[in-house]
Amino acid sequence: MNDDDARERNDSSVISRRDLLRTAGAAGAAALVPHSIAAAAPAEAIEAGAAALPGPSIATAPAPTGPLMNLTARETEILSAMVDRLIPSDELGPGALEAGALRFIDRALSEAESDSAGAYRSGLAALDRYSHYSRGAAFVELSATDQDSVLIDLQTGGATGANVGFVGSSGSFFNMVKSHTWQGTFGDPHYGGNVDFIGWDLIGYPGVRLQVSEEDQRALEADELTPVRRSAYDYATFRVDQ
Amino acid sequence: MTAAAAAPSSAQTPASFIVESPTMLTGVLMPRDYSPDGRNVSPPLTWRGLPEGTRQIAVLCQDHGAGRPPPWVHWIIYNIPGNATGLPEGVPFDPSERMPDEIAGATQGNNGWGLPMYRGPAPPGTSLHHYHFAVFALDTELDLPPGLTRDELLEAIEGHVIGLGSMVPLYQRQPSGNGPQFPS
Image (cartoon, rainbow over all chains, first blue to last red; front, side, top):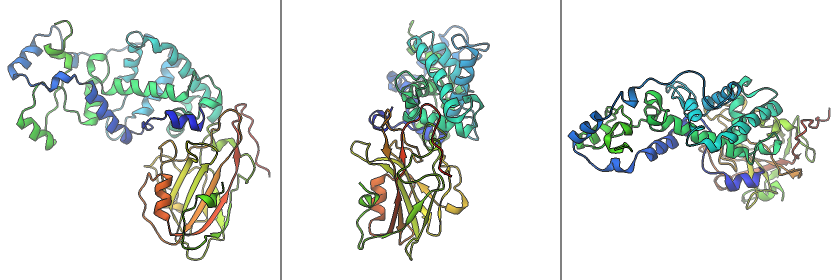
């Protein structure tokens, strides 16, 4: 991609520093909350809905472990490094890796995002070639600062013209991974990410509620509202098989 | 279009001064490390002969052959102390990282990608583009906020530009990895 093209297609998304992500992350999480949550429901109905679920709550189910299903060991290594830079673990708390975004993406590649599997394969290989070409080392071997710089080059499309194998624009690949990383960090835990509600804690999202009382609102404004540790799918209202 | 043409109007014509670089020359391809073919770090600049009364300095890097409308902005940095003699190579792109002591207080504006940092040339295909580094000497100390756009910066320094210098290196993508060497 050249400078003009980059300007045409560049959205308002900004590279990956956590302080810049926080705002967008909050918006992303809010967007994943079903609209019907806004509708008030009696408290007893909420409890009844939650109690009707069989088995352990998704929120309390142990996070899966073991090798990934779709990515090779090398692809896993590169994607893990990229996800770790998009939302790093730092003094503000755990980041995307700890939230399970990597496993979320791997799972999605055999389910809802199966059409993106090829884009991941080619994009991760191109990312590593670009790192060698521009910085003289594999992506995983670069310092965090150089990894960030490489990712900015992907985002802005500067890596495209290096002819290292990006299919289309390097910015398209960057935006795809960023989008999936956000989903895996800030989305509902039902989908395999946001382990231990790390993403929601990061952006201060107080959790899915079917009813918000005046007392809740006051507590929220005072930053004293206790978060609800529950997936939306822990409520009968949102279960698709009901 | 010259860098002078990008300068905001002033009560009097700004004085000229010399802008140079230890690694770049006007009219010569810049090293790939200042582009996404390399490390994509900001290039070093030096200046001399600033007009008396210079209190602060601002720098713009732009490509008048790109952008809709042109120019495409690659770098904006301002709040540079008036006694600075240049910019070191590799000014931090992370806003949380401290600026080098010699340019303490310097602040970066938003480039054409909306990012507050230097991002080097990436002209399309094999085209050759000109990159105008314009250095503005200001007669006052402005405390400008981070993230200004080119237009916002030019508006902010309107009437305070007492000196102007520039250099115009070139760039062309180098996918082979064999970039030009700076003449020794």
